[in-house]
Length: 138
Image (cartoon, rainbow, N blue to C red; front, side, top):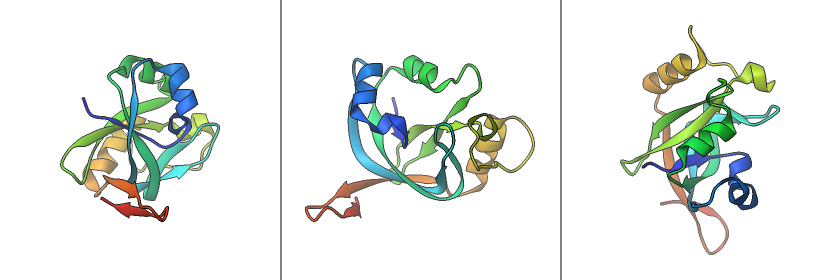
């Protein structure tokens, strides 16, 4: 199963521990082609880049429930990774989250996000913190 690219509350190990029984953090990562938009909870929006990390777990149902996928608060989509793999990422409904973000096009959130992703070069790149503390591309 692909890991999850996390960029908000799920980057905090204490929060993840309260939520999941079996998990681990993979490397730091960056998504090029999306940026973090602040709101009631963070979400992603077209353009820019956002730093986060990869979260490894098989407990998709718990993460979907936490992110409010069934209620449409967030959608889970899959993004390609530079290394040839992929990772899931959650994108929130900017209107419901009071976030400054807009996905172009018509249709529901999933349709607009997936269309944007298919038409733009949005990828996840793993990052590694060097000994000097600077982040470098792996």
